[in-house]
Image (cartoon, rainbow, N blue to C red; front, side, top):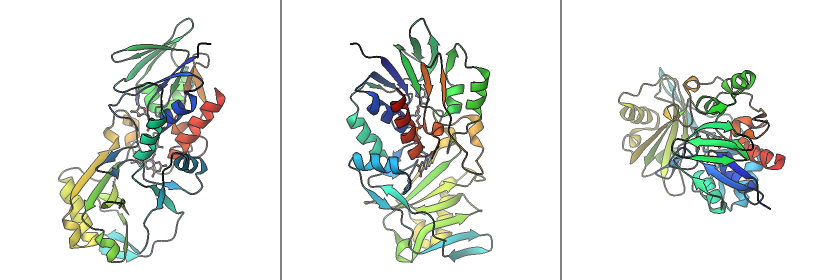
Length: 332
Ligand SMILES: Cc1cc2nc3c(=O)[nH]c(=O)nc-3n(C[C@H](O)[C@H](O)[C@H](O)COP(=O)(O)OP(=O)(O)OC[C@H]3O[C@@H](n4cnc5c(N)ncnc54)[C@H](O)[C@@H]3O)c2cc1C
């Protein structure tokens, strides 16, 4: 019997894992707008420029990591932290929080391992621009091609799903308004990684964790990999990008001493500027983690909205992306 055709829009963690879970039962094809897979998961110079951490309570991503043969190591937190105060740098003992873990080789290993298990076709540089319902099928147009499917799964951040794709028939106004009110997790973030020849802060009894209201980095962490020494920081919302690299190096030198003045490399990912992640509305930093989770379909249940922001628990996180794919696979 001919299998039903399912098009999955987006090759981030949600889209790729959904494709792997569905590919034996359906005729699956994945369409990705970027020239790469991974979405918000991105490595530069072997460093995580998107997500870094998973936490112990996140059973489903932890299970997936194990199943894919990947290994974890704990985030380095030993030693004192630094506070970049206007009156001078202060060292303090940070209160112990929930332990976080990183993936050996970086989070992009997760994407590489899923891609190895994917035998369904994956098309890059295929930005989906419209979906329209014809008699039996859903017709999907990208900038350069067109496709037909029985079902379409959209794994884009909800605001992007609303703003970048035209629907015929149009989305009901209640659904359009619901999608518009769901912020893209980390759609406002910019992450800077500074690589060094050695983790000198560790030798000086510092954890690498730092907090600053002066910027340009607002929250700094140890980001050493198995092979490279590095610190990373989330860029402070008030930071300007003039002479940004010099300002970052000056800040790290103020906080961690003169060895910080000579980095090997500086990497930067500004997610606000990523047209396939963030919308204009997402540029405002969020004060707290939004309460995510929604269920939505369109075109008589043939178009399904998924992605991490749709997950009822751990929405926004990698765990949410995995949960969204698992829920979808169970429902189809
Ligand atoms: C700086 C940063 C730090 C983070 N830190 C953590 C962390 O430490 N721990 C954690 O758990 N999570 C963290 N996250 C969140 C985590 O990255 C996401 O939860 C997860 O990657 C979302 O996966 P997704 O597949 O649902 O969405 P996405 O990764 O956004 O995937 C959507 C895909 O759709 C594609 N796309 C967009 N528009 C179109 C279109 N029109 N047509 C076709 N394809 C399209 C995109 O290119 C993308 O590949 C962080 C995110 C960022 C940016």
